[in-house]
Image 1 (tube, rainbow, N blue to C red):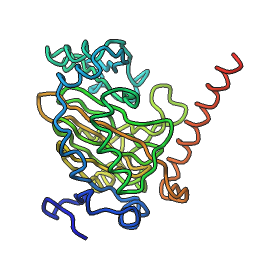
Image 2 (spheres, one colour):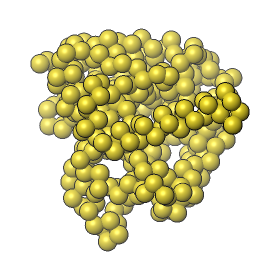
Image 3 (cartoon, helix red, strand yellow):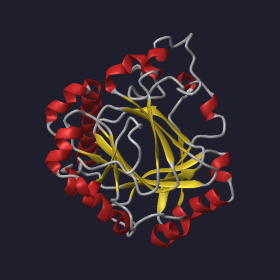
Image 4 (cartoon, helix red, strand yellow):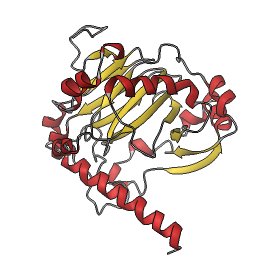
Length: 295
């Protein structure tokens, strides 16, 4: 198979999206729950800077995650919630990026749905090309979500209940990946924990406490790291643990999308993700019923 625009010493392959077919992608990557980096889907769309973002969706009011300057030096078990939320327009947030406030206070414009905005016209062709070449099917009602934040920000170690892709539109992100099979060594939170859900890890992988988390040492030996550059897309199969750091001192812009776990038997490779997926659907169903019947 033709691929790899970079050396093969990296543990995660880089494959041009133009060399793929749905059958090839399924047999080489999807069926084996194997991450891969897809290239050349967004050559005409990068970079996306704040001026372009503001011109497209500047007046859109969005929820911004406010972690605070001390959050990531505090043990995760002490977190009372994942983050606080502030409402502001995209333009207001971009102003905080430019003047350094977003970095100082750890403010992140995260997972903002862009499916019905003009921003979608910029990233959409590449997303649609990936869907065509891989056979991945969109997980409704999700379309595309934008992530914008300061360099140095880290999204803590967690896994998702669906297949996912992360596409880089400005700057570079370093992604640390761990297979679902080593979950116990990453110490997921118990269901009863009030702050973080069981798809989040209690550990800081770059500041490991082996006395408190002794199985972490073996888990770290399974860590795979990749620097995701502008125009590249990382396919993260269901259940793969990932921690994502925005590199550099400037800001980053990324887009993610969730995809159906096809075929459903692939959940056998990540049973904890099947439980998470079922619980999230039950939660949405209960809220839908509450809206309809007012109970």
